[in-house]
Every structure is written in C-alpha cells, then in structure tokens.
Length: 119
Image 1 (cartoon, rainbow, N blue to C red):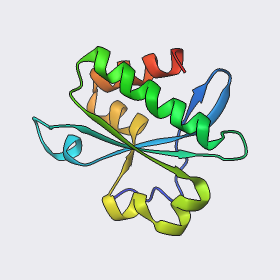
Image 2 (image 1 turned 180 degrees about the vertical axis):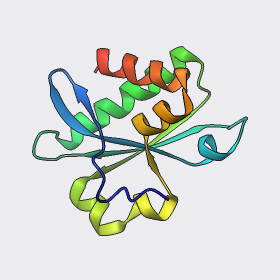
Image 3 (image 1 turned 60 degrees about the vertical axis):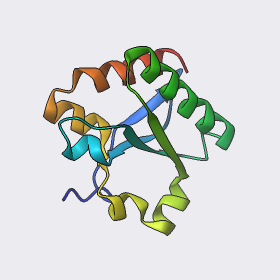
C-alpha cells in the first residue's frame, strides 16, 4: 500500500491556485465494472474555503455526468480533518493522478482535465 501521508500528492487547481489533493478509493480500484466512482478531496483550508471545496465537488460530479460516469461520490476533508480521522489510510485511497498515470485511465484523466477547466 502507498504511504499517502508522506508522499507528495499532486494538487488539483481552481484557476491558478492549488486547492487540494484528490484521491480515489472503492470499487474503481478493484473491479473491472465499478458501479460508481469514490473520491476524497483533501483541501488546504488556507487557500480553499469549505464552500470552494463544495464547488470543486460539484464540478467533478457535473464533469463526470457529461463523461458518462454513472455516479460520483466525493468526500470532502480539510487537511486537519484528514490527519485526525485517518480516512485515506483506512479506505486504502490512492492519489488520483498517480492512479491515472499507472493505469492509463483516460476517462478519469478527462474528468480531471474537465474539472480543472470548469471550476
């Protein structure tokens, strides 16, 4: 399992500012026919308000719907909440951009590209 607490995880952006880190977990990692896409967005509350994090979640869901992803669930956690609850480790989440690169997942690559263009 990846040590996601110490590894550098790529930020996703809204506009020109990095706002948070996006992780994938659940059936998309293990099933050839997943029912949904489970993501965790860990946002830096020094540069991203909770409302901005909700906007990122909505952009991901809207872009996913346009791309034909049946259902997207996005858990929102601040950096402090993430450390406190250990959610990433408990669900075996993987940084999304690393997953995309290792699995050549073009659908998820398009999801991120679309979400970053339409914050």
